[in-house]
Image 1: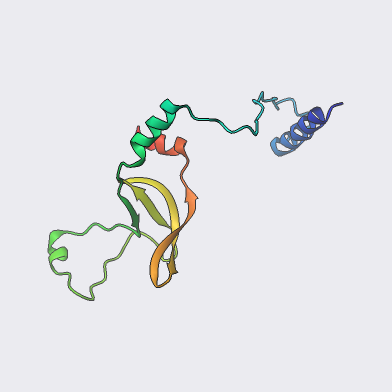
Image 2: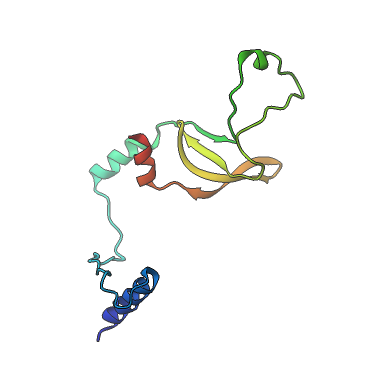
Length: 132
């Protein structure tokens, strides 16, 4: 048996165990393309297209949380007022680009300035699903 087949048999056994079956009959072999180490060289047309969008400005913001209050309470806010947010202390911040959630992160301080360390980047698939 080849190494690839041995690996597939191990996966089938693991899947069968996770599903509570003995024979791995439900496991399917996936056909995958081979990965190559060769770097994809961009054509001049591709470079031109990429250069077109690289200088487009976007707005990035970090959101600690949200709250809905009525105008009466809004007008009563002053220095020292506390507004309750919809998040628990220690929860990750939302990182938004042009109002679209792209990641979650945590606040860090670097050279006496606040920053954000990305802890979870939303996949392209998930971002596209939210657009629909």
